[in-house]
Length: 486
Image 1: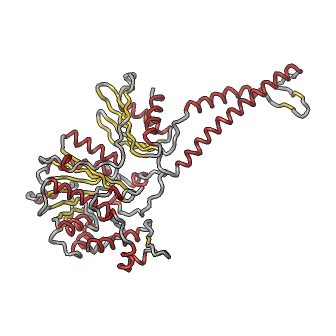
Image 2: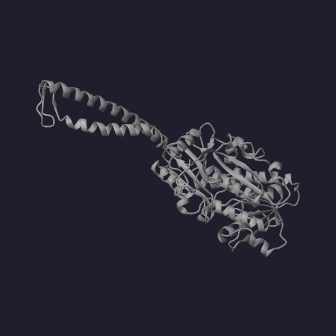
Image 3: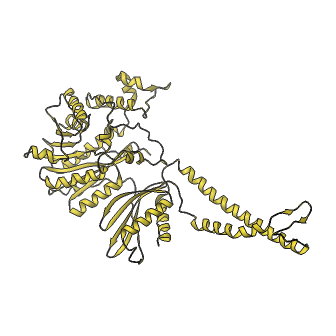
């Protein structure tokens, strides 16, 4: 479902760009676009070059920016970037900062997209940092090409810190906000496994270099590092912000901020078929949650389903053992799972079920038991010569008329049981065929399970994130865990 209607109210891309106008205005756009007989213009969004040219032309048409986007670097999504900047505008307005605003962009990238948009749109002074020297040079070229050196300063970050290096070099530096779009993934394997095979292919091409997509510990650890460094420089930056790509990471970061008593607020960035999240926090006397409250959700709030485990043996009565048992169940059910957080009294897993392997467990067990019981009976019947109406030896015993009737009865019973088993098997196969169809659609269930120790009790909290099975899928998986947790 397209989420354009949930974009920031001031986002110009709530109304899709006029491709016909771009087709007439830019020759390079007309070279990658197609116009049908009705005059409708379209492009192949799965072609990275087409995305690159579209973004370049939109920046020129809508903002007067001449930006070179390298072929081996990330193509910025303009509606998303604009959503982020507009939200920061709201934050600045809420604390009465409207003139001479200075911002910090952590990891500005080859396009320096946030500083460029902030400078031409709002006349903000921007500082951008970048670790990759090639990307930094490209960013400097883009700033120079647009004559914005008086508003944008770019710095090479050669340290392991995110913001500390800036204030050690310039103790008097003060900025109103920082912004960041951290890499999502912790490794190439994490990147390749991030998209469920059950989901349909993305509609847009995949772009980006390893340094833009991968960081040690992934997005969650990157943001936790930023929160830790922010404590030391809480008087140098009024409001800290970051973009979040995974909703379960947002939940963890909110818990971290709550545990430290840090004021914060969040938002959703909706565009196309993609949702990202914004997280802001401050150490100043700003009640930013009430000043810029979280946007009304387009979906109902997901309330976790809780279950308090009954008394277990001392050996099992700890969250690590329970976690391992649940992981084993997930493996048995072919449910993908990933450790998100491990604390002394809390373990959190993210899980994705591609098909329903937990339903009809009793029926399947009855079917297997019935099959096992019928096997001895079937072995007694070796052959029945129907044509000659003659009973042939069964279990090496000759059949007379009485035994013939007895054997026919036994055979009839076997046939009936076999037919019942075939019918049951057919139901199971039908279930599996439905599941196989779902494999080509969205995941059945994606959610979070939290295993925590509360006052000598182990509590399971399961929360639904998305999936075609809805919250009912969460209830079914929890019931399976209840039935099998011993």
